[in-house]
Amino acid sequence: MTGEDNTPRRARRGDRALAISTAIVIACLFASALLDGTSIDDLWTLYLADAGKPIDTLAKLRWSLDIRPPLFDAWASILSHVGLESVALGRLLSHAPVILLLVLATRAFMLRLPDDRRFHALFLLLMLSAPATIHSAGLYRGDFWQLAAFSIQTMLVRHIMYVQEDYRSRNDGRIALFALPATMAAITLDYGGALFGGVLAMATILAAIARGLRRWARSLTLVLALSVAGVIASISWQAPFWARHFDLYQNWIEMETTSAATIIMGLLIGTVLHNPVAIAGAYVGRDKWTRHDSGFAALLGIALVASLVAIMQIDAQRRLVTSSNSADIAVLVAALMATAGTKLLDKKLWRIALCTVAALSALTAMTVGGLGGAWQNGAKKIARIAGDCPGTRIFAASGWRLDDGSKSRAARREEPVFTLGYRRLAQLHGFDVTLLSRDRPVNVVLDRCPVLIWIEQVPSFTRPKPDKIVRKIGLRGLESARLSVIRTNSGLIVRADR
Image (cartoon, rainbow, N blue to C red; front, top):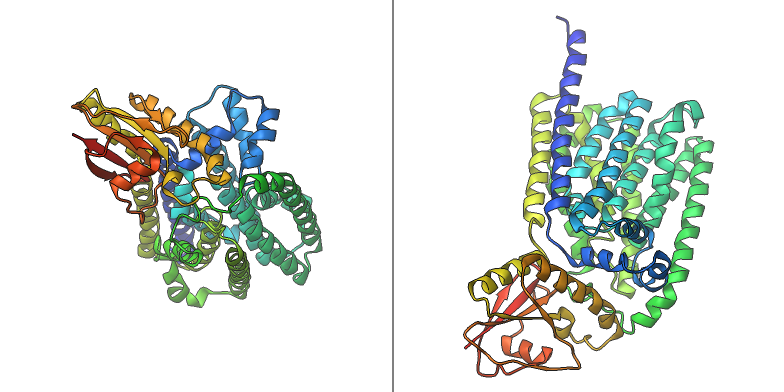
């Protein structure tokens, strides 16, 4: 059998390996959606999509309080009004269609430029298996939507850099149907994503003009203009509500010691380390590197640096950068990694290593990231203690009560979300909880069973003494109690015993 006859067979085996590992990663995404513990982000979505209020009322009184555009809030409100109030099912019904669209978009790009199909297949694998993506799948928020939309926008950049002819509806209509709405979504779903998506769109327009692709340039310019107009309109609507509720611009973002630079480096390094095998392609396959590869890598690199400079300047004025609103970094890094990793796919051992590491990375991120974690972790600990001693009294307070900004309107903005979370998880795990109010201190008498004080959203670096916690939250009668602190994934429990 000749080498020419073997090549298609090797290619099919390589495609099969990519498909199998991608299927494993998608299964991990579904597992994260169904099994990850409840977090403050999930609770915010439940609060913003309260089924007990009409959607027009939610839009006026709730969506306006969000620090993101209200697109995902509207979707979650529709789900809640048709009777779906499960966080896990909400995640699944929100993410599964997007995964399907992402796979279909990838296939459309692969069919349009068959010689470049392996890049798209590998990019999909690396992007889906990145820690940032696995984490976003475990949140009932628009984070996963944002990453998926930005990924399709990145595929369009690849197409613009490699295609040899301008837009023709017969050839390019299918990919335009995916890519242009995705570009708009990448800019309008999240204010942090708007910066990354806008910068990448502008860079792509310039690249299209330079390559003589005028129809693509015009289409992208129109999409960018509409997207920016949508973002401006959304900010204009929400800004007055922000001004009223953020009397001090402080929330859980500022309660973290992690700097913006640390968050950004974590996303950069974490994405690279989740599959360092792909990076080896830059050296091992250097003889296969083309000027198109160089142009694509340069465009992504410029867009990444420009975006990072912009967000660092914004963050220097007001602390806004989080791992959530800057997660598009992971997509750009995954695309650069895929450009190098594609050069390895003809080599069996490298291909197996790359696909295996991707699957293992997704499994690790899913397991370590949040299965049964977040608020669920504290609720489970309390349920076990209450089960051992049924007379256990359980009180709960917002983590704001331990912070200097606890008297602010920003803190009061989140109080209903904390109340919703404590009551929901207490009911789920079979115990009663009493919410502590700042204005009404509570007297408690110790019995044979302990008294528990449940406080979520306490940063891990915070190490308050238990007696100080008791004083701050307004619980009296525990002066002579034996106090201890139990740390949870996202907060703490103070236990008071006789």
